[in-house]
Length: 460
Ligand code: ARG
Image 1 (cartoon, rainbow, N blue to C red):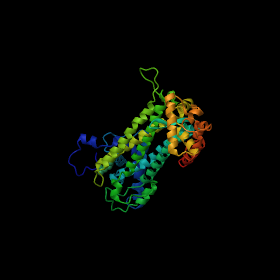
Image 2 (cartoon, rainbow, N blue to C red):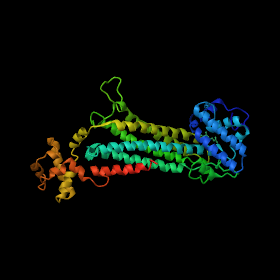
Image 3 (tube, protein in one colour):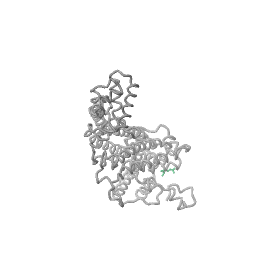
């Protein structure tokens, strides 16, 4: 049964019914739909728009429906038009005319906009807490590895010495910004559009602010067309979630590289790796690969919503029904990825010897050798050239900078002295980079402390 039968002389074609219906996915907002209706009904009563008895009947009917949906006594019929229609009709079937009064001064257009906002008000904090859990885990692993020397890379070529702790902390700060972005978006989501009606508000004396307040929202939309037409809070969320996935995908790519035989910087726990059906020796980083792969879904969700919205005239258009699947899929995907990624990180084994061995090769102390010459008074460009020539010789003769004799050093420049060995030792290179943000153990400890301090904000 449709809510809009009066004008029509024919039943909706079954194919259109299926095509139009959103109950399959919007049923997940049932609790928010009921919550919004309760707030609306109370306000209608307080404003003298409906009688207290009708309000009572609506509230108890909605409470009953919610309880029955939760215990499975009531289920969603697959041919219902959407969650709003289903709940209103179920209510009316139970409480009669009072149920028919619930929709006074309201349209499904402001109702659906409210429901999605309420759903995100509940869900965004869950995603944030999954990410902060990952951040906490990363800080713990980083703390154990502030002294674990590894090569830092640019262009995937060994570049300068860092530590594994320093590397992990880079992701910590990316993920903390993801949390900030999500919370920022949450602030713009917690705004009530109710009272916008279909598009032009309503003539009933609604108290919009009271509804917003009773729902724990922080304000009301200032323009009724905007209130029902806008989905930028959802686009913003998908943007923020896409960035989360970019971060997780890059991290995954590194996990995949590090766990390869070629790197062997880490070994994944057997519980977080998979085997091959044919190659008995294989241990595959499927979790990381799937996270990397699933990033595409979330970018797709963002693109789908941006594209669905970009040509729509104001106000509501049915195209906008597409918003929910994109939002739900992106949230589900991010939650799933983060909650599998965290224990993968917590259980992996770090192999410091291999990181150290990789750091010993690849001339990652060449910059420090040049800096040494600068400390002896040479201009940096000359120091750079001299060091380059020394490296070229090492490459030719399969040596390291640490392994050159003083005589060999002096063949490039007379300013080289015994103290060059201390200058190019990896520990010295690291310890020297103790400025804020650097890889020296004290600097990384400070980063960990800062990150943990920021985490406290999310604990309340
Ligand atoms: N199921 C619809 C949606 O998700 C609800 C709003 C319907 N409004 C309308 N005028 N057809 O967008």
